[in-house]
Amino acid sequence: MAEADGSIYWYAPDPRAIIPLDTYKPSRSLRPVLNKNIFDVKLDKDFEGVIRACSQPRQGSPDTWISEDLILSYIELHKAGFAHSVECYQDNQLAGGLYGVCIGGAFFGESMFSRVSNSSKVAFHYLITTLRSQQFLLLDTQFINDNVKRYGAVEIPKTEYLKLLQKAIRVKTGLSPEAFSHIYLS
Image (cartoon, rainbow, N blue to C red; front, side, top):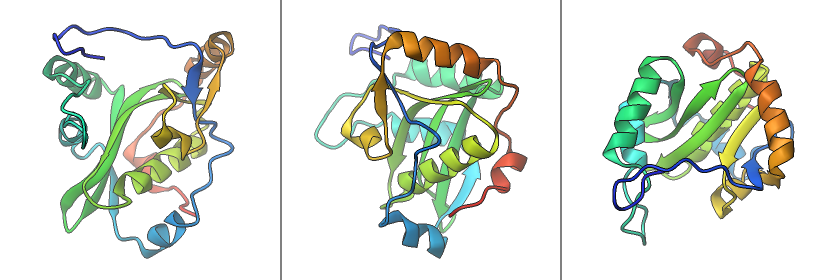
């Protein structure tokens, strides 16, 4: 994370927040949105657009943890095939999305944004459904907050997290547009 002075720090919180892949269910209010297909959902079509949208300060806070140096670093990770974005489009305009880093069977969710109601929730639904179908073991969210709690995030001790992480990064899987386009949405 980037601090106000431009310094970049690596955090390893204890406990660590994860979203168990096997317990996620879309909320009742999201199901009609999914069934109406109001968003065109893509993988990695506009990674830079997503991270730049995520870097904008949130309402009520002038600060952001995503500095220009972090943006450029994540763009390089994307070019190398490690960082991915899930994007929701409405009328060919980027409406919302999320990005993160993929190593083996672990996906490290970094940030999400929404310009249109429910767009980031739909992007998350597509992400988790794809992670399940591709045999991922870990969806890491680092810290617990109200946003990730709504998706079922829980905290686990660092020792348990490290065991899960070691197992997950050995899994031979990944995210690809082909795998992404074959997911089942309900």
